[in-house]
Image 1 (spheres, rainbow, N blue to C red):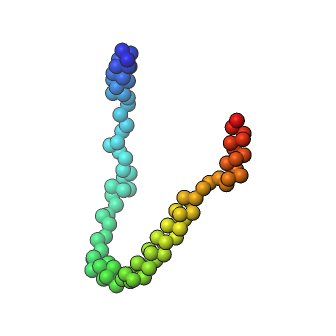
Image 2 (cartoon, rainbow, N blue to C red):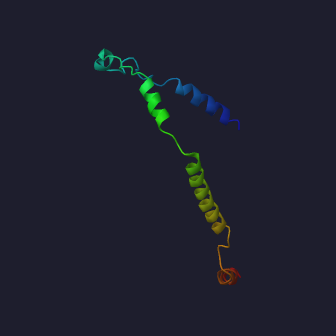
Image 3 (tube, one colour):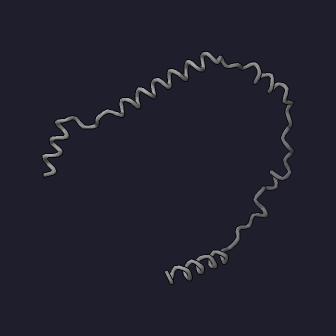
Length: 95
């Protein structure tokens, strides 16, 4: 424990000696000279979103059928993994 503190302090101090990466010129000149993206009106996007509707009855039916399938899979996994013959065979090998 006495060696851990100086070791951690040394490691922390050594990380301060690393070379700092140059981040000043990460964008190319082409990117800096490029125009801003065009802004599009939001009304067509909102109209398209409003036109797509979901049927709550159909969605609920799909979810209920998926839920029933998942519950059936979960119940199948709750059963015994080994048969009685396999359990006896394992017990006889353990002795």
